[in-house]
Length: 440
Image 1 (cartoon, helix red, strand yellow):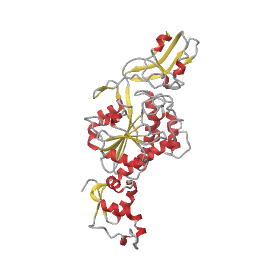
Image 2 (cartoon, helix red, strand yellow):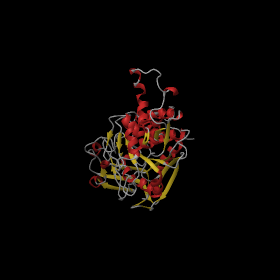
Image 3 (spheres, one colour):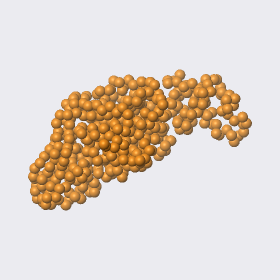
Image 4 (cartoon, one colour):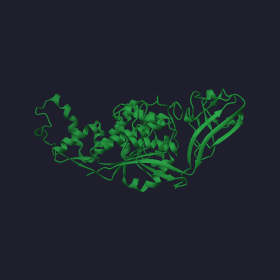
């Protein structure tokens, strides 16, 4: 029987465990539809509870788009005039243009070159190329290999199918005490690439396992694992009214597995609860994080924030897509992402969720400063050197007017919001604070 856990003896949700899960997923040839996507979802489903896999038939109209035919591939190669096989799918699944039509024929090098893709500026990398909505075929190879091709007759062989089938996506709903939702989305539709492809779903798995382990949750958490672009459009076409009614914060996870600086892509509105909490958590985790303009968007935030949808979705990244040379090439391999990068990205999102869970509008229950000493919350001897340790508490009290939420107060007094959670609990236990879901 197949082992249902990643090939690692590390504790679950450790960076090593997450990296092992990514390693297991890496060889699978995925696309926006097909067996590779379903196989990847099956493996993810082994690691978490309650993953629901949905299917949408080819030809389904979704807003201005149509769900494409399903693409599957079994084998592909080019046979050179000397009989050597190159650009073999079994060697690297980036060798074949995504959604390539089946073909088995002989042709000249001149004719073949019209179907070859390489990069002169990165001669050692295989590029990632797709043609989802225009029917064609092609092979991708290192430019240094392409330059060595000799004149003669080549045989090209692609054993693929493109026919009506279905598009799939995964969904996990983790119930909370309210029907207000935090929406998290990531994508799983690219072949063997580490940061651009697998880091988002793997970090989502780690976050899901943590959320499911909590004894209770204020919010309901909705996590979607979709094919990028068409998958998020499909998801919105099925859930838009519900999402617009219930989602209070949302995050798109992409390129979160490397060791570089954290990055943030705002929602189109730029000032949603999602923007506020993600920027706050990033500032107190990595003060030098990169903040990108929404004008540079390129992932599924395009759909979730589009006019008429208007969901409060911000994107969490490390090295932003399109900004690192390994992006969309074979160089984005398992050595580009790390156990440390994956684990710390899970921890950042845990911090975000923890702050959201406790982001109440705190209000003092007594006029003037409360008498903290009789409750054991204030030093019984007052002298100039023992005031600093309680300044945070006094400043928290000073701004707990019921009009500011936890993030607002934390920003105002210059402390991480998650450091104020325990303090708020102490004040509440002593009858000095009341927490409200809405401003008072």
